[in-house]
Image (tube, rainbow, N blue to C red; front, side):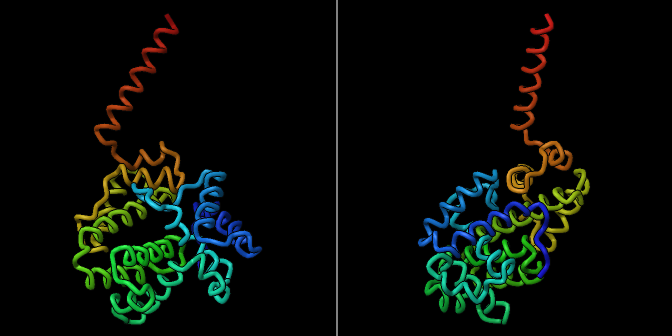
Length: 255
């Protein structure tokens, strides 16, 4: 199994630490596990894999802990013992396996989640995307799953568009973190290519979202992110005001 990118090093170390607590019996409920994850991330100054929203974000981020256990630590056979901690991820993993083997997404959700709704759909996609960004799933497999869900759930078309926008923002932020994208021309070219790959120009993310992921989630230095990203009018106004205040203070001090 390929190694996860270096900019996720501390995230993976946090997941390994949490698995230590799970294996020694210190965690007995999913709520405790999500809270432990929050505490460990906070102590390491790590943000969950996210876009703008933070709703239930640590519960959703348990996908990372699950995947590190399954693939990074080789605990796949042990996971059934922890159904009470990873019920969502175990079900989502089975749905992914079924879909990649050709099953209909609605049928797979009904079989493993015992319900077919928006939350179940996007929990599966969250696990798939997390597996992709940690190099546990190929982009080809991820896009196959996404396309099958889109075909099966046209009623969630606007939600899929938002999800694609987040995915593209994440991939752009990754490229900035790796140093593959170093200026705005390269960023725009990659953004266009990613939109084509996902089948819609409407999924192009705003630069503020790319910056949010790059700086907050992947911890790219802000000055480096800004080399590749345009600032919104609000950001320009704020930064301009900051420079003006700093210049005024310097003038007052020198006077």
